[in-house]
Image (cartoon, rainbow, N blue to C red; front, side, top):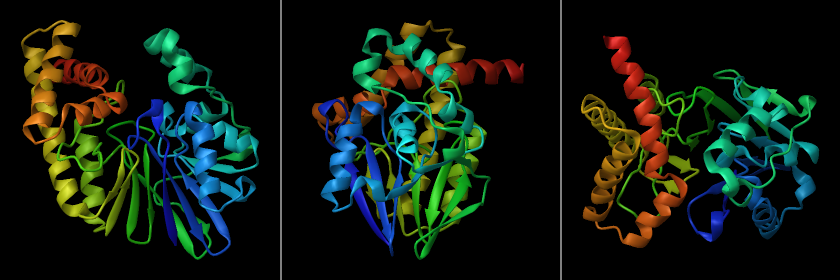
Length: 299
């Protein structure tokens, strides 16, 4: 199997969102589509790999957040079959609720950030259960249910490599910093840790992160990411106990993560790229929602 990394250059920023073009025998597949705003760049990338768009017949999305699956409906309307988690299926077929929620968050910036989100025909969407396999050329693509970042999240394994979506975090190429993907509303600590453990136990030789690129030390990366998830959860609990308001919570989390990034040797430019793709305000909101419900359940 041949894997091509396509840099979608989200908002003109290189190295923050990837889609992966897979070739096996006479078949072509995509893992992740990115948002509608980068669809033109994705199509250019496919053509640069020497593949005509009509040959893309299978598309796999790890979850339906717009930076991962915003353009999935377009591919479905071109005749590709889109594979996803069972809880993601309805949002691909009827994305209006997803769009409305994102518009409330991003307001007037929605269109420039995410572009058009097209509904996928029902017959072009296939939900995969945990462990279900899809034949692909000489390979089989296996769905691994991996909640924690989102309840509708799959990672996809092909032999000894794994396409992780957001469940293995955000680590940009050339950076020492590892950012926890904690967007609201479905960050959940225990499922997250269990998902990371599942990937670790598979002993993959490589991970392909949507944000961004290849990890050649999967075990080391996943062990470090497990620690990072625990760290941000502990910080969220402390912030919650302090009774911070939303903006104070965001400021505290940004200061902590920015300091970690820069002290690790990364530049301000690298930090800006992390903020473009996994902003601390968004993650603080996800952690705040979890910590509040978590402490309420304990009490």
